[in-house]
Length: 238
Figure (cartoon, one colour):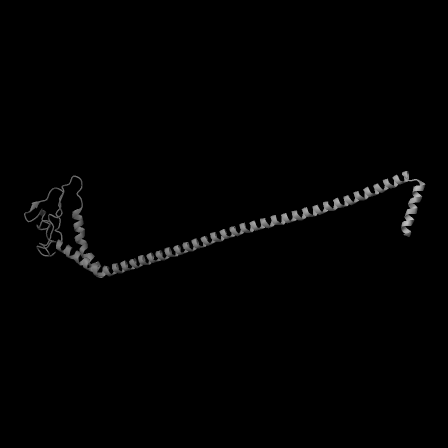
């Protein structure tokens, strides 16, 4: 971590300077190419007469009020600027930063990637498990539903068969009861007819006897009665 911070501190001045050079000019100002006077690798040391801290941006002495070795005068409102640090140092610092980041951050990044991969794999496994469990539960519910439908169909069929048997049994019992009632009524009617016939016969016989008795009384004389009595007595003595 210290190495990364050192590399960042070394690169910060150069990057800040380069960023400042890249800023857009204000309206009305002349467009200036910041790379035109870059100190690529010509002045590596910051000290001494030819050090980049002692020179202006075009390579002339810093603080003489002119630009470059030729001593070009400054434009109105223009200020003399110090030469930039060697850009090669910026590249070296950036390369060192990348190396340090690769050594220090790569294992962390790999560990984070592996952890994230494991989390994703675990999530996918859990999702697959939940999907399988949901499918199994759905299959179980479908099986129970089919079983319930089958049981309901069986119950309805049994109820219909039972109702049909009850209907037949009730009809048979009603028909048997009707037959018994009919037979009893017929027997009662036959008995009443026999009783009425016997009564009628008795009444006819009694009426005929009364008529015969009356007729005999009216048409039989005393002599006829004596002859009948004699005949009866003879028959008894014989």
